[in-house]
Image: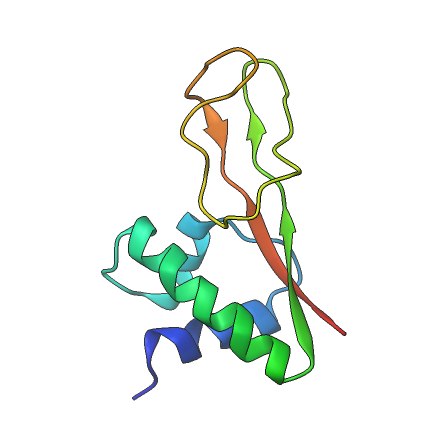
Length: 99
């Protein structure tokens, strides 16, 4: 039986398109909530780096004003837009590239 981290890495490596945390949650078939899954993704990022891959991030965007959260270090979805204060945020998407 594979761990959640192993399944996450496998799904990301096999994916042909960027995936949101919700898509990953469904594909990995886990009962972890998105916050816990983001924590697991931090560890997967390090594992992929050791394997010669990079976890790339398509930044989150505000659905109301279009602000792009390109300067974020954290993988988690931001709670509010700094420009318009909207909480309607499109979550970041993740994909893997070779280093």
